[in-house]
Each structure stands twice: as C-alpha cells, then as structure tokens.
Amino acid sequence: MPPVEILIEGLTQSCIYMTMAFGMVLVFSILGILNWTHGQLFMLGAIVVFYTTTAAGIPFPLGILLAGLLVAGIGILIKICVIDRIGGELYVGVATLALIFVLEGAASLLFSSRDRGLAIVMPGVLNLGSVAISYQKLAVIVFTLIVMAGMYFVLNRTKVGLAIRAVAQQPVAAALYGISVKRLSLIAMGIGCALAGMAGSIMAPLYPINPFIGRIPMIMALLAIVIGGLGSLTGAIVGGIILGFLNSVIAYYLSYLSEVVLFGLVILILLIRPQGLFGASAK
Image 1 (cartoon, rainbow, N blue to C red):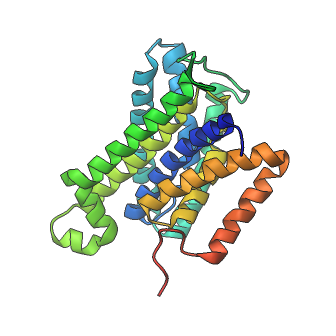
Image 2 (tube, rainbow, N blue to C red):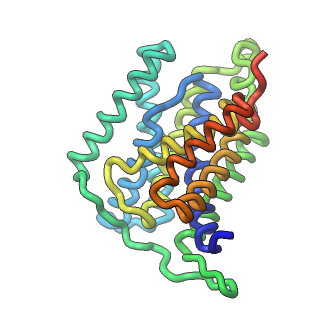
C-alpha cells in the first residue's frame, strides 16, 4: 500500500485530468472534433493567473475566474477564425495541431521559456491524525468538486445544458426543434476551453509554469477520454480519476519506468474493451 501522501498526490492529479478531459469531451460531443490546443489553453490559464496575482495583485480566486473567461474567449476565437473557416475533421485537426506551436511560441516570447513559479497562495497544512494535506492541494480538490457539481447542474437542470445534451445526442433532431446548433457550439467551445484555463490556473501554485506545461495534461486528458469512452462525460471523469491515481502510484514504485507501465496498462484496457469503459460498442 503506497503512503497516503502518494494517494493525495494521485487525487490532485486526477482533478486536473478529469477537468481537462471533461472539457475535451464536451467540445467533441458538439463539434465532433478533438481540440488539440486544449493543453496550451491550460498553459495560458496558468500564465494569466500568474500575472493577475503577481503583477495586478488580484486575489487568486478572482484570478481563476478571469483566466477561465479569457481562455474561453480565446477558444471561441479559435472556433470562429480557424475551425469554422476550415471545416473537415482532418484539416481542423491539422490546424489545431499547428496552433499548438503558435500558442507556445507566443507564450515563449511574452512570458519567456524558463520556469517561473507562483508563490503558494494558500500556505499551511491540514492535519488529519497522521495524515497532512496542504491547503493548496485541498483547494484543488474542493475546486474540482465544485466545478464538476456545477457542470452537472448546468447540463441537467438548465435550458442551455439540456439543449447541449440534445445537440450532442441528436443534432439534426435538435435543429428541427428550433435549437441553434451554431450558438450552442460556441457555448460548448467556450465552456470546454474555460475548464482547461481554470484547471491550469488552480494548479499554477503547485508546479513550475512555462509555455510547455500543457503537453502532459493534454496527453493524459486524451488517454482519460479514450479509457472512459470517447464522447462520454462520465467516462471522462472516471478515466481522469483512474489515470491520476495510476500515474502517482506507479511513479512511486517504478520511478522512470512509470510512463512505460502506464501506457502499457492503457493499451491493455483498450484491448479488453476498445470502446472504453462507458463508450457504446460498435455495431
């Protein structure tokens, strides 16, 4: 049994992976594409909260909201200026792949490519008997629970959320009932990108910030939605939890071999159940 601290680290990683994966699946469900810039939007969220808290002196919670809004706007611009103008899954995929290097290059020029750190904004630890968890990691966990609960409410209890679900399941039928697929695709893109930006901002005090920090979370989020089932929001959450704990526990025992074992386990899961844990079987 790994130490409790390793399990807490795994839970912290699970929070970032599930938030990222949820945003990716939401965009995929409506637009039918994988947004390959999702990791770079994560990176931009971390950079935004770095500047808002250090240069502007804005409180950290407000900085998270500002990062989410700004990154949502960038995501909507990507959809309007790139995705809508190009069309076609293959070409859109290539275009968003190219945007990875554009966004990373722009961040390198404006932010610098070296590691920079954001001071812990919630110092101290919570002692639970023999277990100690930092308030910063606890904030990540609580924040993720609030975001996931909020998304559940929006998608199941609001008109916009129900319309998004309708478009995701039957876009043609939804359009016939007067639902604007175009408007909802913009909303879904904004929400999905905002989740990436807020995920990057909430994790900023815990890890070094540089223009390339979004690559690993992007890969893990992609693995999470493949494990959970492409198009399944529930699968994105479960896949993120599985990967977070696996990555932390395997790294504790195997160190530098952890990535090899992790990807091997993912391949094994897909060999057993190619559609993912919550995906529909191909007919």
